[in-house]
Length: 277
Image (cartoon, rainbow, N blue to C red; front, side):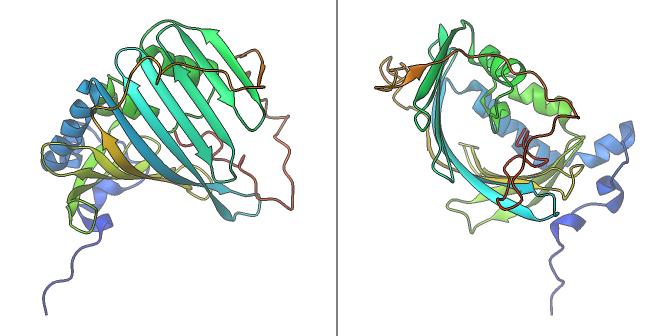
């Protein structure tokens, strides 16, 4: 009988994967598997340099309840990006709620068909600048926003603490390289398409410092590197009958004013309300 295949947790030395250990210079080198790092960097450079793309992301994320139980909620996002200053994000949650965000280089428009409202704010600049505004000023949930950034390679280099190669996965739609990595606050697994188009196919993020260690899971499909980015496609048309409302920057909720929760209904506002980052 042959040797049993090691589990991903034993891909490398245990000291690299220990919690609460900040690697020094020598340990940092050992934590970075050259093959895995090259694949991750290739993916990052490829995405950051793509002049345009579209992708469908089907995701699920855990919300830890007061009881300690984990409830998974789902969402789908269709993203169309055209650099330097065009972006469209269509989102639908598992309960049917929909959101639309469009940036046309001059203004950001957001609509909520369920509530029959929309808002617009003048904002010129690049997609990178607008994403920072949405995240930092409006405190919007923008899953995997980092993958839309032209600074993705530098951002990963700054955050990454370790990266390992697991295997060539042949059970995915196309062969992928399975990697595992760690930053200061999350563990992640990513499956990157092998070959000349190293696009992410699947991603799992574990928030190891949060109560219950919730996860975010995403499957990427329908990648298109030459999507329709015509002005009409990336233009905002207010929904018929919708009311325009102002877009306001959110203030942070204080510790003594928690979000109300119903004891009968699983809550989406548990300790992963800010996730995925």
